[in-house]
Length: 77
Image (cartoon, rainbow, N blue to C red; front, side, top):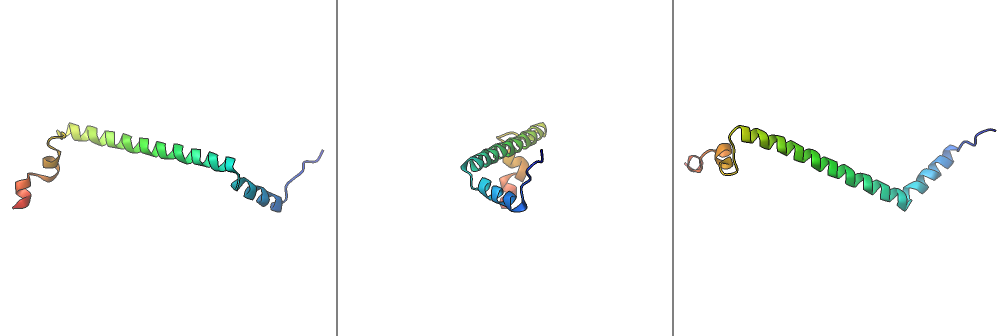
């Protein structure tokens, strides 16, 4: 039994049909949402590491501006 192969034209028609399919669009949206959430998780991990480094360097929520920018009086003068 010989396999039926699709012609190039049939392949392009099937691609067009699939691109217009609501099911395909729904699956693509799922992938985008999952990718976006993963990117957000990676950003939070990076921030956590930076926060740990800042804490090791003695930076706290109370003194962060002074540690980063110096005393405000020094800047104004």
